[in-house]
Length: 159
Image (cartoon, rainbow, N blue to C red; front, side):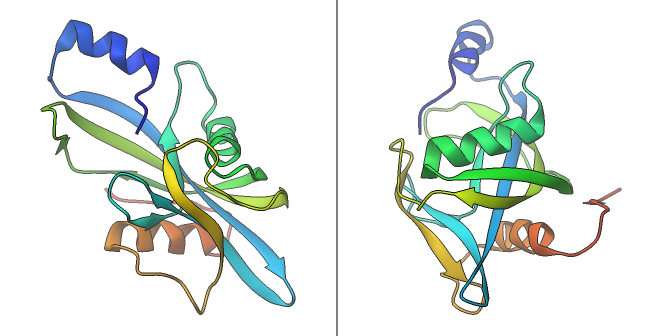
């Protein structure tokens, strides 16, 4: 996965120390032939199916980051409609020794245009999936997807 330039710069200063980073998950849905579908991508690094995810750039609005990531990763135009979940992930250590912990902001997005494909090399596949025919998702991604599809105006969060 490409590392954003601002993180490369930070790593020069802090080495492998724990970084607190803000990220987004974009749950993009569309209605197609009477069925609700969601956009999923297959990560190139580990082969997992997930909604589109990414890191928020410094100064970027989170909803704009979700829309940008969907366009960059899947070549799909979507509009963020609401924040659905705020969740802190456990600290993680990457293969190179870098440590990070993420605040994930999950957004529900409405599809506008575009047919998905792996647009930037971060993913090996991208596509629309009927809710009744999803590929296997891990527990965390299942929770993000459920939050992004849930009705209601309020976001969920933990204490």
